Amino acid sequence: MVSAMAESPAKRRCRIALLPAMAGVLLASAAHAGGTAATRPRYLDLRYDENWNVLADRGDAPAADFFDPLKYIPLTESGSAWLSFGAQLRERLEIWDDFGFGGPPGESHDDTYLLSRVLFHADLHLTAWLRVFAQGKSSFVTPDRDLPGGNRKTDVDQVDLQNGFVDVTFPAVGGAQLTLRGGRQEMAFGAQRLVSPLDWANTRRTFDGASAILSMGGWQATGFWTRPVRVNRYALNDWGPKDSFYGLYASGLVARTAIRTDLYWLGLERGDASWNGTSGDEKRQTLGARLSGVVPGTPLDLDIEGAYQLGKVGPGDVNAFMLASQLGWWLESLALSPRFFVGFDWASGDESPGGDVETFNQLFPLAHQYYGFIDALGRQNAVDGSLGVVLRPLPALTATLTGHHFWRADDDDALYSASGAVSRPGSGGSSSWLGAEIDLLLRYQLDVHTALVGGYSHYFAAGFIDESGRGRDVDFGYWIFQYTF
Image 1 (cartoon, one colour):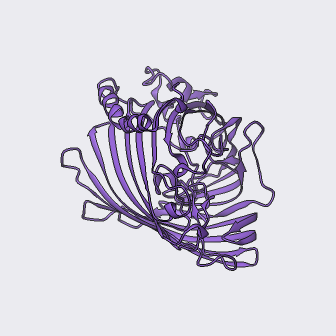
Image 2 (cartoon, rainbow, N blue to C red; image 1 turned 90 degrees about the vertical axis):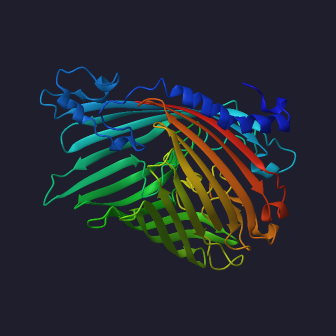
Image 3 (cartoon, rainbow, N blue to C red; image 1 turned 30 degrees about the vertical axis):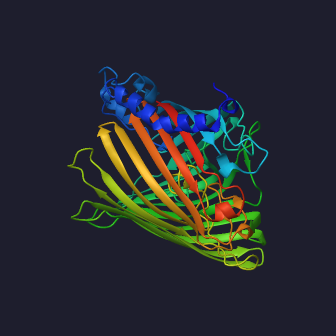
């Protein structure tokens, strides 16, 4: 691998800028090599949601896919007990120039490294109502990440358990079915703005606890009580004794429409929290709702979500909110099948240090998808106006170009990164303006197993970032190879 330190900044910027063009050539040529996916279950982000017992109906017919014999293994003659195996390998090469806006001085801010991750699972169905699911993981970085902070906890997790739970499903009564789940489990709700397994991270997020999933009349409601799992790079992962995450999330379609409604209550408790000068145990409740789907009779799609938070942080009361929205316009019949979209996100900040807390807590989000791929900002004290287009040059190739403009919601509060940590304290400057970012993403689904991704992002630093320290523009490029079965 070429050492990041052996290149001049000009050469590095040139190489990063060439990534999308190189990706386009590779992905377009790969279009002629891709096979046709067989009719079979799709590979999902939450692997435990896949149901491979449909392969029981194939009888003596040849397998439609090389891995099908591993996806459904009958353990009894009747097929009531069966076993399924699966895995995923992901390699992501990252190239950075002026990471963290070039600060702090005296440290390396340019680097190239490879993030590797392997996930492997077994899904054992003992009966129609009893199931055991286990998934392991191994994540590492080569060579060590030579950027401020070194290897992050989300980069390395030598060997650990990602999912490990038992499901008990009760027979359907009156159209309702209940599943009780206990153990380590990933969770994803709605658009994953607040609760996500965070697939972008090299070590996906997970929780220890119990949940109950009720499905009835086109709706699904999940009640849960868990402890967020903390990554220990070279030891078994655990959780904080004062940390707990619980709540109720319900989702379903509005009658006779394609509009989906989500309603939720999420509770978070953790010790030793600190928000803009207020510290202590945090007990925060989040009440929210979301509407999403195609606007009837139009080519427009809408996604709007709002949430309000209350509770306590030490002696201070919590009073925070967030609003997220996106309006899309898909012109399916035109060349390249473009979908144009415009979005607006607002997450509240704190008006003054100390006392009551008005900074929104983003909980456990997929911030990477919403506030720019460079991850300079999270959903805390942040305003984002976005505009973009999705194109489909080939049936399996999508290209997405997005522009973001960022502000602080309150200029007395800090700049928070995608991880939720303070990047720059609010006292560093008076400007609300944070600059802009442009993201280009190319994705090609080579075949049912293989995905190739190339991307480039540039952050135009301005305003508060210039006032509060080094304010160099940031360049970020990446390649991803992912193989799933």
